[in-house]
Length: 280
Image 1 (cartoon, rainbow, N blue to C red):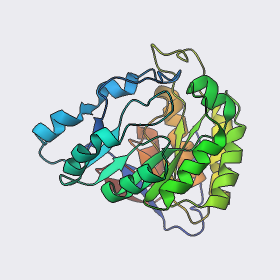
Image 2 (tube, rainbow, N blue to C red; image 1 turned 90 degrees about the vertical axis):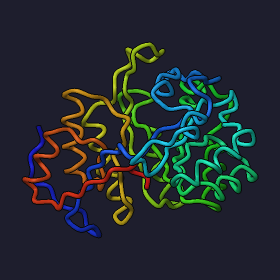
Image 3 (cartoon, rainbow, N blue to C red; image 1 turned 135 degrees about the vertical axis):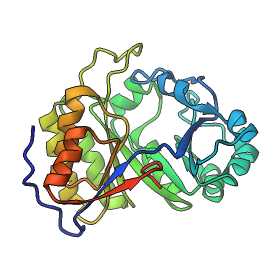
């Protein structure tokens, strides 16, 4: 397990946010249905989300915000037009974090009028787009959608490490592009083998690779918050990963493993706790 003698990155106070997002309800616009059936997800994570009609019919007490996603079409989009009125009604109950997929100018404008923040899969690896997502789209489609969204709403790009293999390659190019394009924050995810999916037996990236990537992200973005998001492997891998993230200067960790909580105390960081999705 990594040691506790890590320096806090320049430009940030000695703070770490530990996020336990129980006051943010995940909502699916399509239930468990997804045309894409991506190799790493297979609709698995949609099953744990509440249906939009269900939430509108009886809002839960103590809920402050909503993470809205859903199954994508085979073009990598969500049909916003058919859900626009219901999304507007949901936005009256609390701020929305939308995971929209690819968008055009009209979609981006609508999203900007409805939601507080967007979580955007920033994917610039053509092999991942075609063979993991199953999309006949190109990296420039994702970059174009990112630019459109940033014109109208705050966007948190999400980088999922390891979808192309145990060694990271194209993820570094995505960092360089984000450095040119700009970002309000960056959320780092780590591929998690999920039972029942086509990549169930695909290994997560090597921890040494993830550590190298996190340190490079910190160097490239010394004043932009870095998050370690909810999607990452469990068990001993997660315990080591969360400690690595602390040492690399990540600013937020969602549901940190116990060793990371202990390390943060040993590093004498100011520990803050959040109860909503890390994007808020």
